[in-house]
Length: 143
Image (cartoon, rainbow, N blue to C red; front, side, top):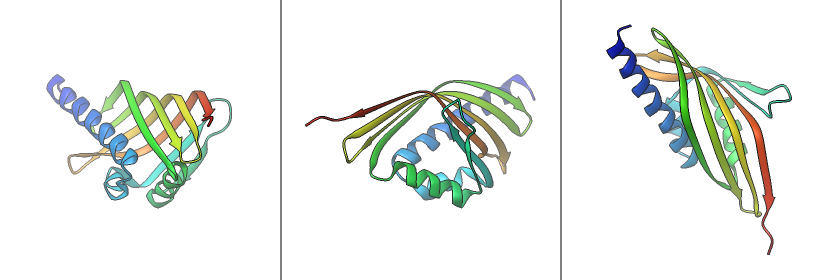
């Protein structure tokens, strides 16, 4: 892979991850599904326990929908560490995510996504994702 091809892949991966965050936060489940492989592996943990893992696009979407139900969310990713190998990329993204639920509880998480992306038909697809929260702040709004 030439330096020029690597730069293009870096750009494409950051665009794909930005679309992931936007479609998750706007609940555009069809567009989010397009970004995933059919056999995606998805996991979450608090950094101390074993991650909860789902396998498959439908199960992953159902899990994500349940996690954000009744909430407004904002997912922000920063400073990717990208390791390219032809049509596969391993990426670690620093992440801050926030969910504000209708019941007044808000949760802010800080940590990392560890992901594997594969290029299929000139598009990057998410094949594996592990979200690890290193810090989680939970607050209850007072009235």
